[in-house]
Length: 244
Ligand code: UDP
Image 1 (cartoon, rainbow, N blue to C red):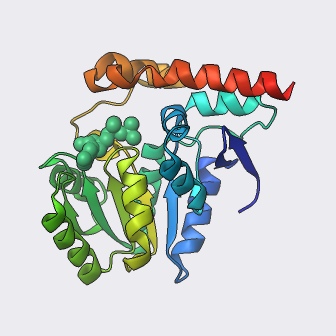
Image 2: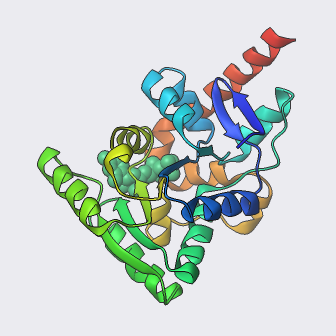
């Protein structure tokens, strides 16, 4: 895919949600394994001092801008993006497509019980969805081998990995080459939302571009990482100033 924009060295595709879904739909009809990430401002900031994460993001087939911070930065740096493509919405659309076109799905990540509950709710929502397997995201080396073997055996079309950043990106880069899947994507905290463990911001907050603030306010774990956001802003401003 062309129409790439670079923010602090991280490539992002300027696509709408519909275009991203159409692209993935095409890929699912082929035989090549494709990798999709959904970097937000926090992940791009993390990548500035994590070379492996930065490299992983650059190796994906598609990186969509998850969040208003990324859209703002692109605009400021003179390479506007079409808009944001929230990872949770992309995942939801892909699961709808999977139910309709009969693609099998494996859910990997989240605390014990989360992927199982996400599976239950998704099957309730999309009756025909074929979730062939799931596993939580807190594993030792031995359990990880079991997960890899299970994915090898089940050959899901879509592998959704919710280990949080940078773990999911690094795990996928290391493993995707040996897994018989058509599409692997990092989905962050999406399984928590699907399972009802975490609430998405109300629509008004989202429309105002304040989903990030809602998440910080409602999730204590995020408060500890929130400093990445002002850091991202400062780095983007510096990049603009250097360019000007
Ligand atoms: N997680 C996991 N294994 C780990 C660390 C995290 O499965 O070793 C899960 C965690 O339970 C949560 C998700 O990864 O479901 C990360 O969520 P977060 O909201 O931090 O991700 P984001 O959406 O910001 O990428």
